[in-house]
Amino acid sequence: DQQVKQNSPSLSVQEGRISILNCDYTNSMFDYFLWYKKYPAEGPTFLISISSIKDKNEDGRFTVFLNKSAKHLSLHIVPSQPGDSAVYFCAATGGGNKLTFGTGTQLKVEL
Amino acid sequence: NAGVTQTPKFRILKIGQSMTLQCAQDMNHNYMYWYRQDPGMGLKLIYYSVGAGITDKGEVPNGYNVSRSTTEDFPLRLELAAPSQTSVYFCASSRSGSSYNEQFFGPGTRLTVL
Image (tube, rainbow over all chains, first blue to last red; front, side, top):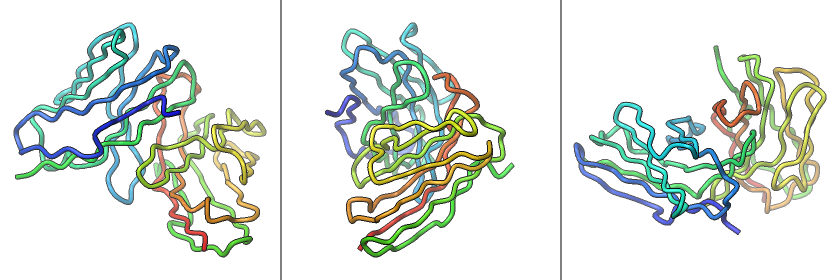
């Protein structure tokens, strides 16, 4: 039972445009959500997070939006850059250290 | 700081062999974790530790063992390797168990069991 779903395995965007990565969850107990970025042959690195008491969190070019009623979150990258090409994982937790990860979305930013 | 280091980077095992995946962190983090990532799947938690001498099972612990004798090291042991254990293994650490403390990941160990 996949509690965190990323239904788009891949996404291709032109440099300078907006990238929107989506994530859905089913567990109502999740109250904190994170995005990790992963380059080939490296471990995931933390990108941005959001608590369930907020609906938006922004950090530079990266913004995460949370819609609790729809159990949906999205990561917006504006403007997209070639160095953003990576796999992006959505993760969620119901409090504490146990993260539940989605299957990832491969983002390719083209020149 | 080296962060989280893992050895080896790659390993091929025969069915039934055993091995230990090494993980070390130099950030004085209390919490350490082992994940596996299968192709096209997300990371799944195998075991975690909240401090030296304390470990607990994650989502997929069968076929693995761990120990935590020091703050720095958290080795993962495979006793009887099976093809289903072919995966990429990531070790991670965090300062505490709070959701707000990000987990830092190592570069991974790619294991193939034939």
